[in-house]
Image 1: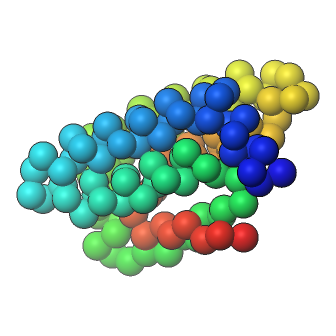
Image 2: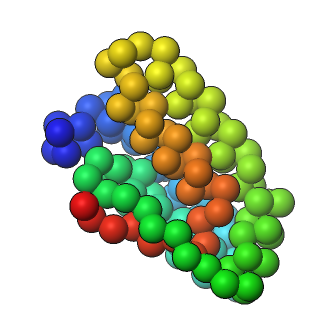
Amino acid sequence: MGCLGNLLWLIFGGFFCGLSWLLVGLLWCLTIVGIPIGVQCFKFAGLSFCPFGKEVVYGGGPVRLLLNIVWLIFGGLEMALGFAAFGVVLCATIIGIPFGLQMFKLAKLALMPLGAEVKVV
């Protein structure tokens, strides 16, 4: 399912999800303070382009918590809501359920991206 799922994912909306992470990462990198957040966004753009066969492992600490709060205020909540809404639309059909679940994975990641790592399953 990995290779075929990733190919279909790109066709049915995954390309735009990856572009959204890239755009947000570029915006964060415009400031020196936002570069760590922008680099994390670039990592998740790779996940957004090919999410099948990968899982997200969450970790963190007090600094990560503060950066995640800043992330939520300046764009993370909007991204999470967009991914969740698109996931609901994809889950409306039986064929779209695997893609909807990937959107929900990205929505959860968009809420608290700092301290998360992508692992290949």
